[in-house]
Image (cartoon, rainbow, N blue to C red; front, side, top):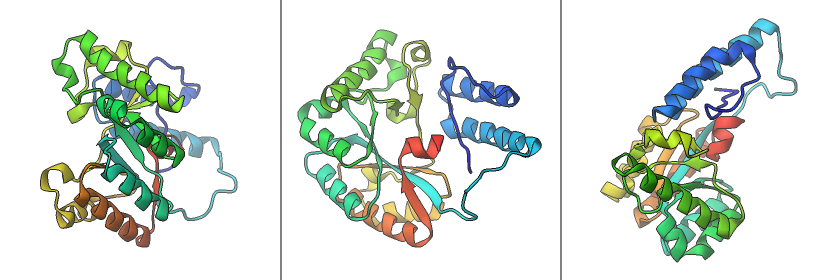
Length: 248
């Protein structure tokens, strides 16, 4: 779907015709709902407004590749993240890495390598604890501490947050100015660590504009990611980072 956009709920939205749709998106994000459900609603409203006003996209190609975002959680891993980065570079693919603060502290050089490879770096909390089960101060610390660690290495504060287990702490809405990103296809690679199962999970379920959840801490995940990329490219898919998928 073209024209997908998202804003945090406290930011102004300058298209009056889509204010109602934006309110639905904002409420969904505030409740920790799946981000893409709200995005699709807003995108449909924006598309309808464009058609009604007779607006046309100049210079856009008549046909575009289908886009998907490949994401990796729980890194960086000292062995398999570099292998994953090499595989991505060989295939000209950019991905999104949601990093744990405690691993960032251990392997700062790999974090820098991820950035230098042109990949997007997101926050996955500090210790992979369920944020809604923590007092608000501790939950906020899980996020802010990891942001500071990543900034200290890359010079950039992460804008995207994937809460562990997809479980958001509602009180953080007033404390954390970040976009929550969940997923559409969960490979469960951490559970099976089986190359065939991981690949089949994606190929049977993936659709255009989907966000694929993987991890970069297992050998099977590396080999499966390679096959997933090669196969989906043949099927006309293009791999982009989460920000490109949501905002371009």
